[in-house]
Amino acid sequence: MSDCLFCRIAAGSIPSQKVYEDDEMLAFRDINPARPVHVLLIPKKHISSLMSATAEDAPVLGRMLARANEIAVAEGSPDGFRVIINNGRVGQQEVPHLHLHIVGGPDPVGPMLKRI
Ligand code: 5GP
Ligand code: ZN
Image 1 (spheres, rainbow, N blue to C red):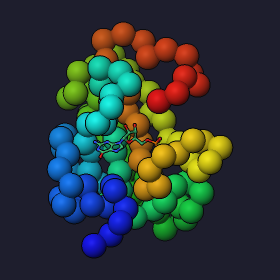
Image 2: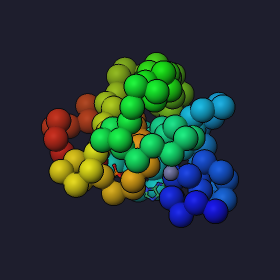
Image 3: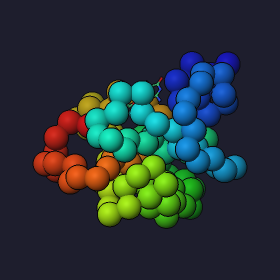
C-alpha cells in the first residue's frame, strides 16, 4: 500500500468526492475548499511535482489541462477558472503528488498569489 495520500485516493482506499475519472487521471473536491469550486485533478501515476516530471509525463499533463474546463463548468464555474500547481518548498506544496487546483465559482477568485 502506498503511503502517498493522493495515490491512496486514486486507489479508492481513502474516500473522496470524485467529479471526473478516466484511465489516467482523477478529479475530486478539495477537502478544504478555498473557493466555491475547488477541485484537485491528479494523474493516477505517482509524479511528485513538476520538479520531477519528465517528457514522458507530458501527454497526461496536457490531457489534464485539456480536461480542466469541462470539470470547472460541471462544478459550477462556467465563466472561467484558475489552475494552480504548487511545487516543492518554495511553491508551498503540501501533498507531494502532483495536482492541479481548479478554483472558481460565480465570482472572480482574487489576487494572483493569494494562498490556495
Ligand atoms: P497543496 O498545498 O499540496 O498544493 O494542496 C494540497 C491540497 O490538498 C489542499 O488544498 C488540501 O485542502 C487538500 N487535501 C489535503 N488532504 C486531503 C484529503 O484527504 N482529501 C481531499 N479531498 N483533499 C485534501
Ligand atoms: Zn502518489
